Length: 481
Image (cartoon, rainbow, N blue to C red; front, side, top):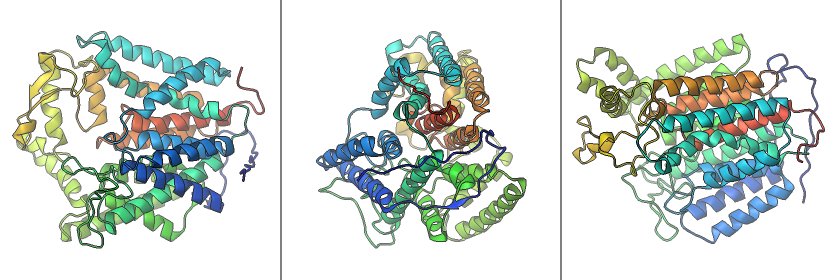
């Protein structure tokens, strides 16, 4: 049965000058069932049950013709969620295919003034990245592997292409994003605290664990073993924070599912990014102040609970690190900050300074493919000495990765580029939606998940950018040549 979508017409006031009352989330049964079927097919595919890919393809094809909102969200999840289908299962990068299609789409898409400005700005940014790569002595063939991650913002054309010559209702997109978030959160809750393993989200394992398969599932159901499940399947939360803050209300048990999912990830930068974004984009100072107070009270309570229960939620250890950094006596003490992330940064920062590359970076060197001696370092801060010899390509803080690749100059240009896109969108209603994804991805990047240097998070920033451009386009305009 074909689903119909009714476009909600509003006046032309820009975002921030009008505010709709928050609605209780409601969606037809078909929306819940299609999304569940798709996610279950990804779970089976992630367990190396390869016939599941046939079901995945069928669902994507059906949604492309029947509901483009579903299709857009499904493609984004499929492309950016190794927590479902790990790289060991599917051997090619789906984002690369989307990038190629986006480049083709840009050629045929008829652009209005705002889209032209955004397109020119993005191409100028990508040219800047290639220009910075010329300063490195690593080959361009290797550097392109990392440049393509930075260039994932070009995926903004996908929603524009999917909704060319079609009405676009942002509330319909928001509604489906939240539905998928709720299902994925339920998967985290069941996998983490009932199955106690890797069944529904087989790719959320850590480096010292092995991938579950359909014939060899790693789990301990109904035990007291609650593994940490990495947040690599829940990046869609980047799109969900703004509509939850501004457009839709959830029932208490739906919020409980999301909170339990966050508890299963035990990743403070992801949890903190959502809380910060949700509070920041309330839209009214009174609401903002109220949620700030509630967040402070909740954090204080959780700190003492976590401290008393052995640090299961990793909240007390995070807060203790923040307080201990002020009393760090030497570099070894400082290296422990950020769950050891500062220990990753210090020797690479020293290498940048020693080689006079702090301003322009080393170029887009690759963690495994770059073998040039000048980029190899010995990291004395690792407790595992087998990891001490590495190259200087990567740390678990995406902002510093940008410094490694394009230096302080590049970090400034990158920040200015994404902020300038917001000002280009400013006349539109969804400029703040884009800004919310930018904030959340950036805060997540402090823990190595997300950021503006990885396609897994930039894909969602690009979707928000495309949605903002769709909402701002002239109504009923034919947009394909």
